[in-house]
Image 1 (cartoon, rainbow, N blue to C red):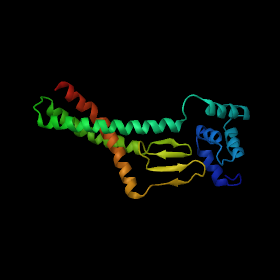
Image 2 (image 1 turned 120 degrees about the vertical axis):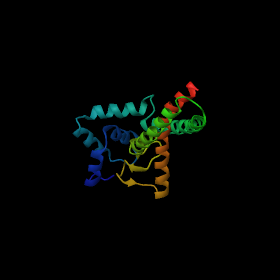
Image 3 (image 1 turned 90 degrees about the vertical axis):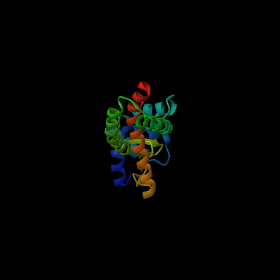
Image 4 (image 1 turned 60 degrees about the vertical axis):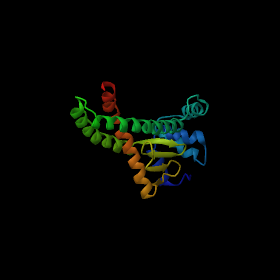
Length: 187
């Protein structure tokens, strides 16, 4: 990073304090003086910055991007299991003779609409997905921002659509699961 690059300094100013501290902790081709100056503008003195960076380096709690990676894998695994359960339960609901069949079918139709809305919200979720990347879209990213340069990157269009579909499926499965669990427990 160049200290004289005004656009890059503005991009650094847009980043949250935690990400700037992570950049200092990783110390990979980062202009420390620029980052420290921006943190100073936010009211942190050099001793506080050094203490916070030291805590990030020596802390027992994993860094944010490691936690998000685990959350993404856990969410995808749970979605797969919920998809299997939901398909079996919905098949039983449609072909069974439950007294709640009509009500649960209507609630599932409403749940599908809300599930896709939740999937849309997951697709627009921003989080620290890699050491130097900000991801947009959970659990599969539909875009990234390089925190060192501020460059936005989008995957190819077919992959983008696939990631959006998976994120929508996650939202859909999360919404339908409680309704179909009620049918399963009552049946």
